[in-house]
Image (cartoon, rainbow, N blue to C red; front, side, top):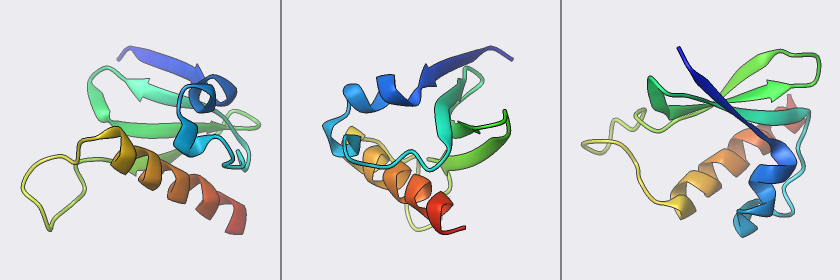
Length: 84
């Protein structure tokens, strides 16, 4: 498995929809090349948490696409970490 690690500050710098989203302990986003539709967060202390599975949408046929949808769902997942 090959991973790409994108630091949180780098991610939000290129995604205006996430610009004011608090990181809630997320230091980076992990992309696995064998699961590109699954985003995991790397938290302070090195723990990983599943943030987004773009294939997990039973009401539609196929994966969800589009940066706007991805950003909205990623934002909701990170915000949920703050209330946990």
